[in-house]
Image (cartoon, rainbow, N blue to C red; front, side, top):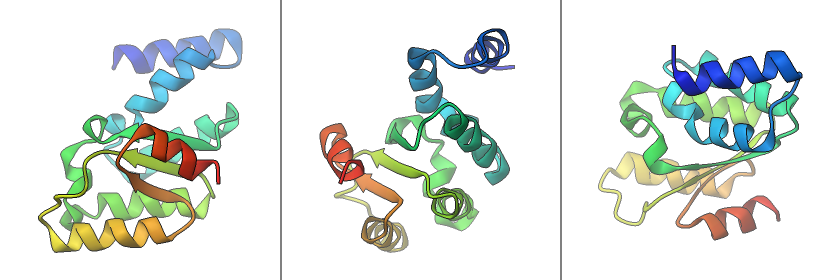
Length: 130
């Protein structure tokens, strides 16, 4: 298994909750662990159970397949965030996206209420607290 995942799960079992620092670290890495949309749903549910309603993830923490829209991974995972009203901001440099489909997807997400692609952590925090 993954060392961070195992440590977070052990902490959850022992203490009945995740310490804030563990929760933040776990949240940053969660999309790297998702190989299937159900994995994202499970992790999202665990985050919500711990009291998190909003997650900020850096683009470089996300598996490259997420940004290849042909895989369907992004659409399925982000739909789950929308369905369960969990807010997600993905922080990265999206200004020079060369894929027209990905650019349109980012624009559409940013028009919505649950998933946002933002250029900085500060802008992500501002967007998620509106």
